Every structure is written in C-alpha cells, then in structure tokens.
Length: 273
Image (cartoon, rainbow, N blue to C red; front, side, top):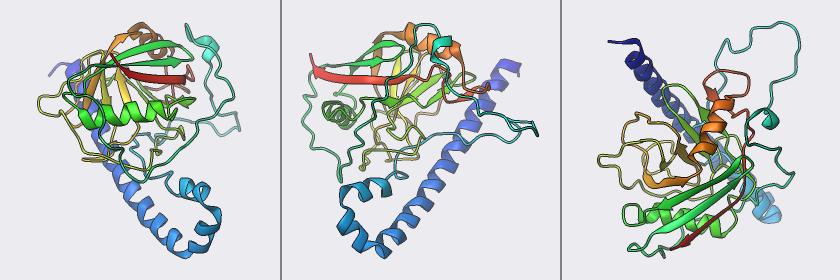
C-alpha cells in the first residue's frame, strides 16, 4: 500500500472516530440539559428565549475537533495562537457584528419547488462563494438552507473548521463557532446513495444519522468519505476563495482546526432561479 493511500485511510478513520466522539458528547449534553431544564423550570419561564437558546447550544450537528494531545509542548506561558486574516490572500478582518442565534423547535415546512434550481451566495470575509442547490435530490436539506438564509441565520457566522490533509473541506454554519451549535431542529439524511465528495461539493455536516441542522461543508479538493453526509449542491464560483483559505492553513499549525483566515460569512442569500 503506498504512503498516500495509507495517509488517506488514516485520515478517514480519524474523521469517523471524531464523529463518534461528537455524537456521544451530544448525547451527554442532551441528558445534562434535560436535568437542568427540569430543575430550572421557573428560570425558563422567567428567562424565556434567551435561556432556551443557551440550553440548545450543545444540541447541534457538530464535528469540531478537540485539541490533540501534544499539539503544544511548552512549559512557558504563551498567548494562544489566533486567526490572522491579513496573512491570507484575499481575506480581511471580520466586523464586530454577531449572528442572531435564532432557534426553532421544528424543521420548517417544506416549501421549496423541487423542480426548480436554487442559487445561493456566501459573501465571506475572504470573497464570494456561489452555490447551485439541488432540491430534487435533497428537498428537506435545500428547504432548510433556504429558510435559514432567509432568516439571516448565517449572517456573521464563522466557518469554524478547516481540514487540509486527507479530507479537504471548510465547515461553516455554527453560530457559536465551536462546532456544537445548530438551529434547534434536526432533519433526516437525503441523497446518500452513491454519494461522493469531489471538489465543488456542498454537503451537510452531522453527528450521526438524522442529525442534520445548520452546519455544512464545502469541498475544495477531491475528498474520500463514506456516503454519510447529504450532498445538496455544488460550488459554481469562488472555488479559488476556498483554496486561498486552505492555503492559509490552520491556526497553530496542524491539518484540522480553525482556519487561520478567520473567515466569517457576512451574509448568505438563497433564492429560486
């Protein structure tokens, strides 16, 4: 077996292990939130939506990695590495605007036209990325994406994860920026039969079957993954933007973590036509 093939297999195995850990963490968080919710019912009634939003913070569709042991080998105190947009081609420092963090109890009603094409524009701090969405193949996924874009849910949301070895994706859509957030609802997988993840694919991130929420990933280089992640569109412009972000690398080095570009989606629009 050549070293490149072995490296890809190790990367895929690592990715799947991370998914299993994320799913277990979410199950623990849900159990914890259930206990907290029961014991603080009075607070919930008094605090309203703000408390409810906080309790749902760990109930998303996360894939965020925990730092690996040995990443930092220093006994001297030092500042944690941070994003450096100015060092990455085409990128700029984000504004101070924050996501609206809206939450919903249920998946939105299915209203997309499955015989039409929908187009989306991700206007990011590193440039524009345009997408063509496919509601015929993934109606619930496209419907949710269009709904969230219309609610300005994605505006000012960071792309919190970049992978640059074995798997080549930029992951976005979590308003917490930690990989654990979502819109409050989850929906089923779609379009998985024969799914592949070639450069230009847009697909949903998840923490296991049927846990799609708001997080999605953009594939900037051919990637081998099991068909577990709903593909729902393709990149029609701005692949060079993603490649610039990837070339900038990951905060602190390594091949998987927050992008050094500190990329944020200023706005996301999606419409039929």
